[in-house]
Length: 430
Image (tube, rainbow, N blue to C red; front, side, top):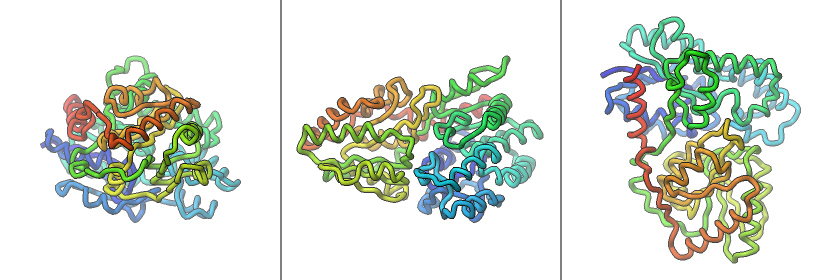
């Protein structure tokens, strides 16, 4: 059995979509000849936006998990500066109306703490990784991010030990959709971009979760670098998580799962809900599960024929139950630009739940391509409220007739076992 060292900041008991990717791959990779060794931060020293203790039970029993401490001074300073008990969420969903101190904190992080505020783990991760590689018969290293500072550990391991290294980037780096809210100067942007390019060019393979992001990374390769070194391996779903999902929605519930940031397009759905109310007698039960910015809550509160329910973060299994109990699911593509597009990881669990998806985003996006390919739902561009309103009415009419399942054809290629086989093929190619 070949051994691969996976270096990841987010690991149970951390919650959120980013944990699921390598938690699931760790369980399936041994079937394809690779034994994973996990290097992560000790939860006592970690700064997680969300915790999900239930995920500890999902860690493969045979997995070797090694933890180290981390220097957390950056987040302690943030809490002291802003008075907030929380660490910032992706997209600043918990800072939707930032005051002066929060804006100052963002400026400091965006210009003086590059690439990100979790870089305090790097020193400890690097020391432990060197020890593991030298004594643990490791054939390759995978670093997964965000936080993108984790990639710098892989870069130093490559430079010092010349080990085979795969950089797995789940999101864009310099062009992440909320970068403009970091108040970066042009100098900071150039420095960040320079570090990103160094990582992309030094890695033996680069894995992106979206074709658009893969193209973006290829554009940053130096002359002589093979564009084929950048590979797309999407996020996915675990078939085992959906074996007993037989819930029937009791109301016309539309569920959004995960963080909903202030940058997200809530207005298109809001206007579509007005259209629905004007042309239908039905009631929408709109449910947000996760961190939701207060502007969005205000937008949907007190509406005629729309009941709003905002819930805190739900443990993974419970979240899947909510999906199965919904009549339709709401999805937002964070970026409005093809170049910086992201595929939300929740898309694949949405598809596996066999509920129709209402997606908001560019019609030429990878998300749109997947929805057309699978028949899992429809995507609507910003401002396309009338068409979305008509779609809501058709969904409601189908729901009343007991028709709420999506066809969702060809999902097998997005299953975690199939994707783990792709990861193993990348490892075997080194």
